[in-house]
Structures are given as structure tokens and as C-alpha cells.
Image (cartoon, rainbow, N blue to C red; front, side):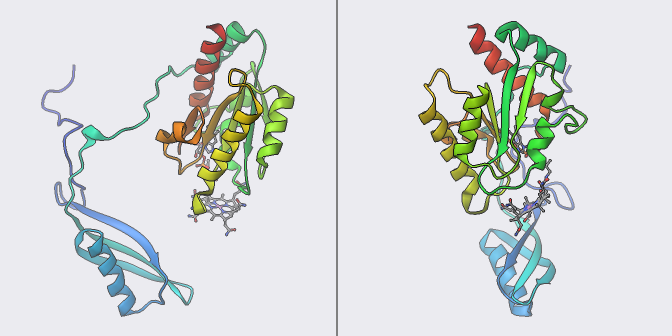
Length: 254
Ligand code: B12
């Protein structure tokens, strides 16, 4: 039974700094200015303009001759309302590898092929490897461990045409794409290019499941990006395998 004296987790809150309800936060940023008192004053001004009052520069470090990194501590005057926050909740059950294998076997009667890659110029392979490689992540084995999954990991800096071509050659059931670099919205542009290419290259009922992941994606953006699911930071292989089993096994059986 839930504790009737426990605070409502969806009640409005302010940040906690030193004491409950003090609304103190700490932010960090870099200004393109050499370190000086004027630079510190400028950092304080920025924090004030962002709604921090008082704002205290607690750390300033020159980053080369022309830049300074700041940490500013201060009070904000905003209250957050968790009851109106929208998040993507997991809407499928978490399965064990054994259960995923059984679901694939039952519904497809063959192994399910997963093709994965980092696309564009992105060379950050640790994330996709955490999901695909047998050694896995956070104590969970990666998709290569699953007997009924065939994993083709194309590695880094794969172009969209190369990815589509390989997905077709492998008859991929699911395509997993990683995007870690977000400079100039590269992750969004590359993902849109990728999903458009798959839509162009496949009839809608034959297209593989498109899954994208990376630490700075907003999981709410799947529709906007033209993919079936977005996974953010801290994703584990089991979550991804369960999603694939849930979506593919469900559609093939239906
Ligand atoms: C290791 C690293 C590198 C290594 C990469 C080695 C490799 N083989 O991957 C090297 C040294 C090559 C590198 C290079 C660069 N890097 Co770097 N790098 C990092 C670092 C320190 C760690 C990334 C990492 O491995 N995380 C661990 C993994 C497990 O986490 P993850 O990627 O988030 O993955 C998880 C989830 O996001 C999710 N996930 C990820 N992908 C997918 C895909 C699918 C399908 C699914 C379901 C889930 C999923 O699941 C994973 C497990 O939970 C980060 C900073 C940081 N602390 O994050 C910077 C960082 C990503 N790098 C950065 C930059 C700028 C670069 C360079 C441009 C630097 C330069 N000037 O040369 C180059 C770019 C190279 C290139 N062409 O891409 C910036 C990116 C900034 C931005 N806004 O885009 C970061 C954030 C550092 C920083 N703070 O500035 N980097």
C-alpha cells in the first residue's frame, strides 16, 4: 500500500540547492572572452538575464587565450509542474533474451535480421556497440547474444545510401542507427535523411523497423523524424530487443 503521508510526486517543485525550497541551481557555460573581471561580470549578467537572481560566479577558468568557462550558482524564480510533463513511457513488456528468442521463433519462424550503423560523419561507435555487441551494457548482453537475432554491425561513418543498400541485401527486419554528434543538428538532419531514404526505397508495408538512438535525442521526436522509436541515454540492449520483438512479432503475427 502506498504511504498516505508521502509527498505527491507530481506536485509543483522548485530546485533544491542547500535547503528544501531555496530554488538554487548551478549552470555552466563558456563565453568567447579572455578571462578578466569584465568576463566574470558578463557571465553574471547572462545568468541574471536567464532569470537567476542573485547569481554568483563560483568558478571561472580560461580555456585558451580567447575563451572562459564559468560555473554560476544562484536562485531561480520558476516553479516546475511535473503533472504536465510529456515523456515516452515504455509501452511494451521487458522480455528476457529467452523470451525474445521465443517470440521471434514463434512469429517469424526464422531469425530476425538487425542492421546497425553510425551514419554521416559520426564516429562514436561505443553507443551502438553497447546495444549490439555481445558484451553489452549495464550488465545486459547485447543483441549478438540473442540466438534468434542476426546482427550486422556496419560500424562508423556509414552513408545513408550504403545503409539502405546493405539493409536491402541483408533483408533487414530492423535498422538501428546511432547519432551522438549533435553539432548543427547533425543528428536530426541525418536521421531525417535516413528515414526518407528508407521510405523511398521500400513499399510502406515492407520497410524495416527504423530505430534511432543517442544521448541527446528527444524521445518524443519519433514521428517528426520519421522513425518508429527513439532511444536516449542509458538505453539497455534488453529494452531494444524487447521493443523489436514486441513490434515485429506483433505485426507479423497479425
Ligand atoms: C568516446 C568519445 C569520442 C571517441 C569515440 C570513439 C568511439 N569509437 O566511439 C573519439 C575520440 C573518436 C571522439 C571523437 C570526437 N568527438 Co567525442 N566523445 C566521446 C565521449 C567522451 C564519450 C561517448 C561515449 O562513448 N559514451 C558512452 C556510450 C555508451 O554512451 P552513448 O553514446 O550515449 O550510448 C548510449 C545511448 O545514447 C544509447 N544509444 C546510442 N546510440 C544508440 C543507437 C541505438 C539504435 C539505440 C537503440 C541506442 C543508442 O545507448 C547507449 C547505451 O546506453 C563523449 C562525451 C561524453 N562523456 O559522452 C564525446 C562527445 C560525444 N564527442 C564530441 C565531439 C565534439 C567529438 C569530436 C568532434 C571532437 C573533435 N573536435 O575532433 C570528434 C568527432 C569524431 C567524429 N567524426 O564523430 C562531443 C559532441 C558534442 C556535440 N554537441 O555534438 C562530446 C559530447 C564531448 C563534448 N562534451 O564536447 N569522441
